Image (spheres, rainbow, N blue to C red):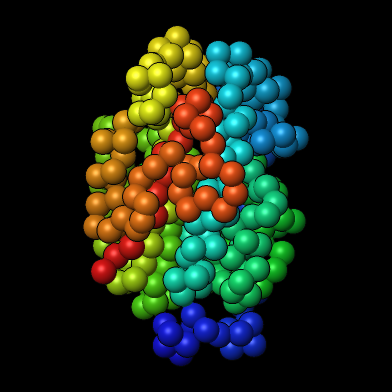
Amino acid sequence: MSAQDMSQGTPDEVPEIGPYVQGPEHSGFSAAEIDTSRPHPARMYDYYLGGWDNYEVDRVAAERVIEVHPQVRLSARANRAFLRRAVRALTADGIRQIIDIGTGIPTSPNTHEVARETAPGTRVVYVDNDPIVATHAGARLTNTEGTGFVLGDARDPKALLDHPTVRELIDFDRPVAVLLVAVLHFVRDDEDPAGLIAALAEALPAGSHLVLTHATGEPYEAYEAGRTDERARDGVVNVYKSATASLNLRSKAEIEPLFGPFALLEPGVVRVPLWRPDGRVPGAEELNNTIFYGGVGRTG
């Protein structure tokens, strides 16, 4: 089947592939090795979204963030809404394969659910480095055909792409979308975030896409002549110093080059509510309080 056929196919034309999941028992982790002594960004994000799949240590840390930046929940919701719009844009562009890296605690509608609203045969592999996410994958992410879960890390793209579950579900002769939504700000400069995207891009065929969002500490350009709340910014960063991954805020000028070989689609890298909005467009103050930039790129 050609890529064009794939973009226009029906569920009956997609080969039947069952669910695949790599749980903690198959990943080198045991339940005893799951670290609940330190907050984990995925579980804190779940708390921001109003979820219950988190621990006391995560809730305490998240509340400390909320104390210094009360709008963090606004940012999390806006980021999630961007994800839904971006996935719909992918399927409209013919994408039928997605690798969602750093998926976090499942929150409906999940990536495969959004994609299959318009493209029922879309295959999705979810990836996260928190074994606790794996415990939820079977019930919420991989209980339908054409979905899988891998316990892996964005900082090791080769191991991730070579994983049997990825190779079973993803055809690298056809365009693939890679999602790095609210992930790269947990990758330090010395861990080379641009290099890991370049490694992912090298493995992908022409027509593949990158969906990326990234937290920033810089103000929205149109808000009160660029006023920065340094106390809030520094307070949030300090909370994450005690988590399993530090928070590395970057400016728009630092985020745009991360797309590397992926040519940015319109409207480029913008605050996430401004990326192809399908509802109310926020004002300058709300955009200033929405700390995520987002964009979608495509290889030639």
